[in-house]
Length: 310
Image (cartoon, rainbow, N blue to C red; front, side, top):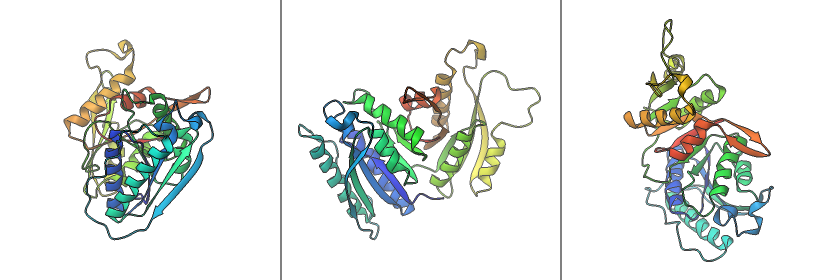
C-alpha cells in the first residue's frame, strides 16, 4: 500500500532542510498528505520547561489546501540563528513548511508539541503511513532528546520510520533497494514497507550477513524465498550474502552487531543502493527504550536513507 499520509519531524537544524525535501518528494511521488511536527523539546531540551515531561501535548496546527503539483524547488532554509524562544523558532519552521506545501500544491499541516518529543511524534505517527526523521547529528544542541525521540518513535509508533543521514543529498530513493534479511518478524515487515516506497521498476537485493562458513547441506541462499516473494509483486529481486569478519570465527567476535551494520553499509555502497530497509529491535529498560545493537550502530553510521520497521 502506497503511503497517503506522511509525518515529517522538523527542527531548525541545517539537516532539517534536507529532511523536508525528502518528505516533500515522497509526498509528490505518491500524492500523499504531508504533516510536519516540531516538538519544542528538540529546539531547546535543556531550556524549555515542558521538554522533560512524559505526556505529549499538541499545541496547534494549521492546514493547507490541495492543488495541482508544481515543480519541486529547493525548500526554504530552515536553519536560522535563534536567540528567541522555542515557540517563535517553531513558528518560522511552520512558515517554511506551509510555503513549501503551497509551492508544490500539496495538502498538509503543521503542529508543535510540548512534553516528551518522542511521545508526541509517536502518537501523531500512528495516524500516518510513515514517519520521516533525521539522523541525530554529532555535536547538536540536544543530543539526548534527539536520541530518545528516535527510540520512542521506532519502538512505539507502530509505523515504519525513514531515517535520513545528517550529511549528504538524497535526490532519488527507492530504485535500488537493499533489504537486510533475517528470519524475524521485523525483517518481514521491512520487506513489506520497502515495497510500498519502491519505484515500480525498482531492483531489490535481499542480503543476509553470515558469520563463518556456510552449512555444507545448504541448497539456496537464506533470502531466496523472500526475494521470490518480492518478485511476485512485480519487482526485480535477488538474494545475496556477505560475510562479516571473514577472517575470524564467530566465537572471536566481541560485538558482532557492529560488524553486521558495517557489512550492510559496505554492501549498500558496493551496489549503489539508494535505500536500505531493515527490521529494528529493542527492549524496555526502566521505562526507556534501548535499541538493539545493529539498529543502534546503523543510526550512528548510516550513509544512505534507512527504512526501519519494528
